[in-house]
Length: 318
Ligand code: ASP
Image (cartoon, protein in one colour):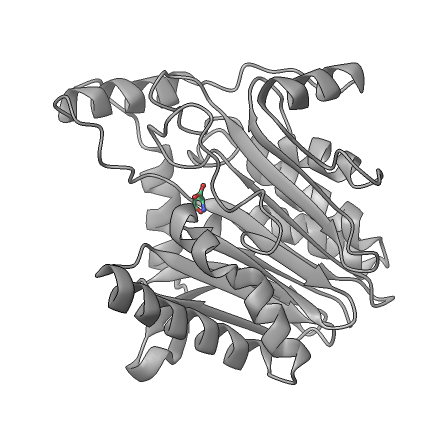
């Protein structure tokens, strides 16, 4: 059995490519790298890689991670500027026994001395979004809407598992701000003996519960990925509301080492993509029912068309 699962519709084309690698008996890490780079390279996705939205100083700072479920090795970068594919840098950092998580200038020095492709990641569209947002805000920078992470978990035909994430983090974030996406246990976790999970949402809240690790731990205790996702997301969402009066957006996907998968969210209409040996790459929408139980609907033609149209529609300066 092979399989891949990813957060958000934006992963679809990447998952199609990655699933092909797995189908041809390719390596799980290669499949993930192909899939995440595809999302990073597509300029119309404004929360990952090229075209990602900038921080409040109009600089695109990117976070990414990679984890090997066999050895539990991980690599991660945070607040990296001017490199085309942060996920590749993260993958490369897995090979060391130390210095696996590099941020800012240090990460850029590493990337540059190891030959990773440099690129100005700030697009014209992202500049327009930035200028428009500045005009909408008075002097207080509060709305961070316009963030998403591509997070993936994959299983190859030999039973190896891995995970990867990539994001530009929160729009208008403070320079140097890191979310959950490059943080092991919070934004991602994978263990080939069990399964893996990955998150998208408000990093500051996701990190409070180490939710990706928590889901893998529940799967290790015998839960199906769906049960594990629902339990962890629902309970933590409730706990945050009880203790803090509110909970940020939080959406998790998971797959176990049998290729069974799960997803849970505290928002309505969260999209995610699944491909397995027995299921073509498919976009699902997740809706909350009672007690954190989820209902999934396959995205229909109209939804898919509208999605791409709204992403690529011409942008005007306000
Ligand atoms: N989790 C990401 C962050 O906080 C953003 C997102 O996934 O929406 O940086």
